[in-house]
Image (cartoon, rainbow, N blue to C red; front, side, top):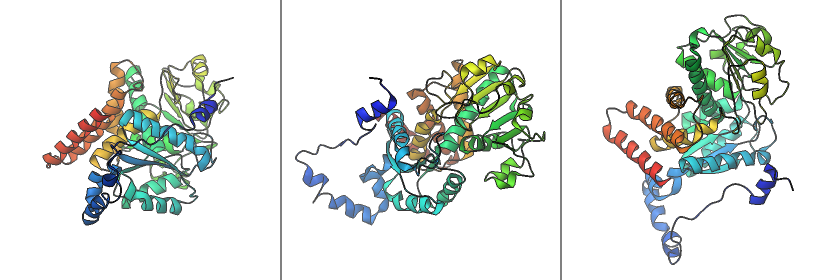
Length: 400
């Protein structure tokens, strides 16, 4: 019998389960009725106590409507559940966070927002996942205006951060300066737009050297208004390129996050890139360009989103630690945080001569510490709060 991923998922009947952490025997009267009425009354009098008397402090929802699962498209909430379960496993294993996979039937932005409002009392944080654009961007932006808990969109922010880390590392390895090299983004979805947001802030709005290609469209100031990231895209493509072949000619970086390969574009296009060069091919489950194809066409540095690639440029390196830091501080994500995390991971990777760090606990602790340090600096006039955050993070890392 062939041992396939489907076989193993069926064997284990899913990837996660709940565990009870209290001594329930002979204590039912304490933790259930009648004793449970006491904390209920306490929380009713002071809602802040819910963070101390329940698991809200460590519980998040991994929420998707199944409209953009991996590179497979709109395959529905049931079919997206294995991805959300996998996310929950990584949250628990690497950050000690109890993540609940929630795949919902919500086809509109309004329906998703209504669900987030309804479920907020039970959660300490929210990870939006695999929701089609522009819905995800609009939901994320609006939700941050009313939610009292942190919310991230991992496809934008997690993937965007790790792409930036890989680009910073490769630029250092090859002696390239981002502000003077042509950077081509193939695909204008969550991952590349998350990266572009970070790059725009890092380069102080000077992103004319970036060319964004999506299918047969190359964005410029004339057509950018049709995209949900128009305010940034309008500043790109100072070269006036009209197609991918033109864009890749003389480019130093290609970040592909479009659709699964092979055959996404003619591989000969890569031969026209500047030398040395970098290709990050991030489509799931099969990258647009394989490692073997990249080597054959003279690519200097290659990375993909696959966990079996030595240069795994994947958001799994980001989201456990990112959410841990946000849970500790109860602050909302910002691009400033993302840039700091990307720089920290790049520095760690370069010390080990890697493009990005390899998956281990050190990585996620570094991400969480960077997030907490960033927000501690924002409250420098409140040393007590900053000290409490630092203490909380140390405790969480220790208990994990």
